[in-house]
Image (cartoon, rainbow, N blue to C red; front, side, top):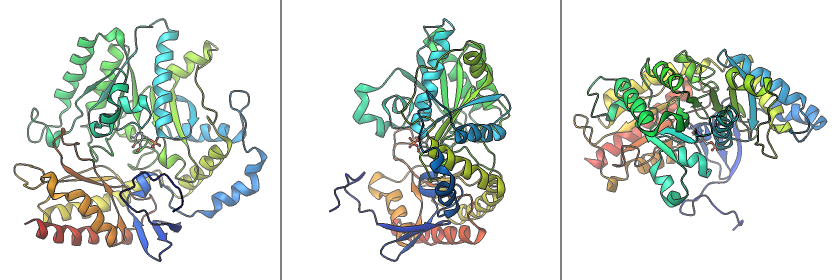
Length: 443
Ligand code: PLP
């Protein structure tokens, strides 16, 4: 016994010896295809020794400075790099150590922006059910992942949740509708009911990941969200901790909708697992307000803008640029989705296939026509994930309760951006084999 307080004492986690590319090698000699990119973190692939070599050569120049008192070259370089691929109109980057910290920072920045402008009544946050924004109390309050909120319910902050555009399970829009009309109407009605002058921001995962496995709004949704937020003076914040930084085949997923949010939060792929790193990318509307008023943002972690993390982030960025990894997921992702589409035709249990680029969500159903999920007792997702793992492929299990609290089975596929077509074939062939045997067992 090592004394590690495990994240889950019910499961045993194999000891890893090394990881390279899309492969994780266990100390027991087994190897695993990391088709979930280790929780969607790994963009540039595992085992890029050049990053740590560069860190050894140059990083010791500045290992740490307190960024309230000093800045350092790595933070300066990385902010310029991030802004060079961000939507036009973004002009500030605040670095933190991960996704929850990024979202916590964004919601505080939104609140302080309003307070500094004299709109002190704006304290409520709007977010969507079936979303996930982090584990801290504030970001969990934003999250609509009911099973994870439950133990902490008494601590939850005033967040008003509305429906996400989850068209596969929408009883209002009907077959083929993209849910935009009904969701936008609900957004505006909620704002009016709550009182527009009480609302600070609307938080949305551009494409919902973990909790709803790839729920993607229609082409007009974010333009209309932007319009409504502007009409009522509400800040619009895109959480791209999972979907940003290349995963969808764009630097940021929102670029497919062509609108400018007030902030974009990111994490995971920006550090690609080589260092803890997250960022809040801030529009000129807010950055300019703080800059021109010489205002101080009343916030800051000891490790905000950590030198070593920013150094690593800059090296990750250089690899992303050099190997075209901000756009390659569009190409390999198209291949992955095309192969998954064929799998969906072969396997009745795949009710819905969602996502974009190198992110795919599969929702499973007991009956395709009625879209009824499997009963919880079938333990479908857990069995599927375990069977994949036995065959050396790691996929992410979706979250029971995502289906409007009525159970449901999902998996997520979010491999490193460097995955080859051959490795995608290996993943899909294994999934094909597992679905065949699981469907037979359930018959
Ligand atoms: N936001 C989204 C969309 C996420 O997927 C996650 C993590 O999975 C987070 C926020 C929280 O990020 P972190 O675990 O780095 O705190």
